[in-house]
Image 1 (cartoon, rainbow, N blue to C red):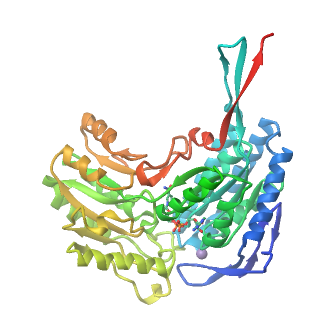
Image 2 (cartoon, protein in one colour; image 1 turned 45 degrees about the vertical axis):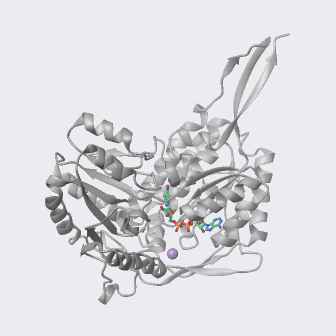
Image 3 (cartoon, rainbow, N blue to C red; image 1 turned 180 degrees about the vertical axis):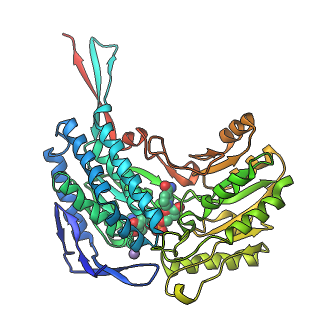
Length: 482
Ligand code: NAD
Ligand code: MN
C-alpha cells in the first residue's frame, strides 16, 4: 500500500483537519507507515456535528420512505461484499489481523448492514386504549446525532454494529475510530456515499480519544453516545454524558470464564477453547481468559491444551496459514509482557509462551501465547483484563464452586461451559452473571441476538432488534375522540 493522506469524512467530503494536523497509522506486523491521517480537533468535531445535526433536522434521511432507506442500507451491504478483499486488506494491514480472519470480519459487517436493512420497516409503535376519551399512539422516534466511538480490536465489525442500527432508525452519525485503526471506517464512509446515503448522514472524525473523542462526548448537539472500549474510559464517558443527559450505551472490558466439566467431549472442547482465548491474538473483549476445569480431567486438559497452544502459528498476517498476528502496538505488547512479569511474580506457573519472536518477525509486535496454572482467584492476572494471548487455568470441584469462581469478577461479558448434562448446562448458564454464554461452543456473536455486558462490562445491548431500542425513543401522541 502506498502512503496516502486520509482526510476526515464530513458532509460527504474528505477534508484536512482545520489546523492541518496529521498522524501516521502503522502496520503492526512491520512498523511500516500506511497513511497519514487527519487528526480532528474540537473545531473539526464541531463542524462534523453541525453538519450531522443539520442533516438530521432537515429530514433528508429520517423522512425518506422506509423502503428506500432499507434499500440504501442493503446497497451498503452489497458494496461491502463487492469490495470485501480491499476492505479485508485494509483491516489486516492497519490492525495486524490474519488475512483469513479479516475476510471473515468483512463478511460479518455486510451481514450486519443486511440485517438492519430488513429491520427498517419492522419497527413501529402501538395504539393503546387510554383511560381518557380517545386513543394514545406511540411512535419510535430517532434521537438525532449519535457519536459512535470504536476500539481498535475489531474496527469495522464494531463500527457496523453501531452505524447500521443507528441509521436504520433515522439518526445521523459521527464515527470516531480508534487512532491506531482509522482506515476501514473512512473506506466504509466512501462506500456509503456510493450506495446513495445522503451526504452528511454518516461522518467520520479521526484522531485521538482525548481530543476528538472527548470533543464528541461533550458536544451539546450530540444526543447519544455509543462507546466500545475499556471500562476505565467508559466510566469517564458516562460521567461526561451526564452533563447533557445524553443517552449512553457502553460495551466495555471482560474477563470471561470457560467452565469445563469432567463429562465434556474433550477433543472439540480443547480445539474450541484455544480460539476462545487466542482469537485476534487475545485482543477480544469476549476472550475466555479464565478456564475452570473440573478436577478429574484437569491434568489431561492442561496437557492437551498446552500441546495445542505450542502449535499455534504466530506470524505474518498476510500468510493464509497464520493463526495469530502481532499485537496492536509495541506499547500494548509491553503492557501484556508486564502482566507476565506480574503473574510470574505472584507465583503462578507459566507452562509455555510469552516469548518475543526474533528473525523475520522482530519488526512486528509479536508475542507467543502463554498458559498459566497454579493461579489463585486473588492474583492480578486472574482479575484484570490483560487483552493479550494469556490464559489462566484453575481446577474446581463441583457445580456450585464453578459458578462461584466464574462470578468472582467485576466483569460479565461472555463465557462458555462444556458438559453433556443438559440440566446442569442450563442451571449453570442461568447462574453465571454474563451477557452472553455459549454451551459446548465458544461463539459470542449472533447478529440476530442481543450482545452486551452485565456488571462492569457495560450498559445496553448491541445487535438484534434490541439495538434499535438504544437508537430511538418513544413518543406518545393522544388523539381525543370528541
Ligand atoms: P479505549 O478505551 O482505549 O478506546 C476506545 C475508543 O475510545 C477509541 O476510539 C479511543 O480513541 C476513544 N477514547 C479514548 N479516550 C477517550 C475519551 N476521553 N473520550 C472519548 N473517547 C475516548 O479501548 P481500546 O484500547 O481501543 O480497546 C480495547 C478495550 O475495548 C478493551 O477493554 C476491550 O475489552 C474493550 N472492548 C469491548 C467490547 C465489547 O463489546 N464489550 C468490544 C471490543 C473491545
Ligand atoms: Mn494501524
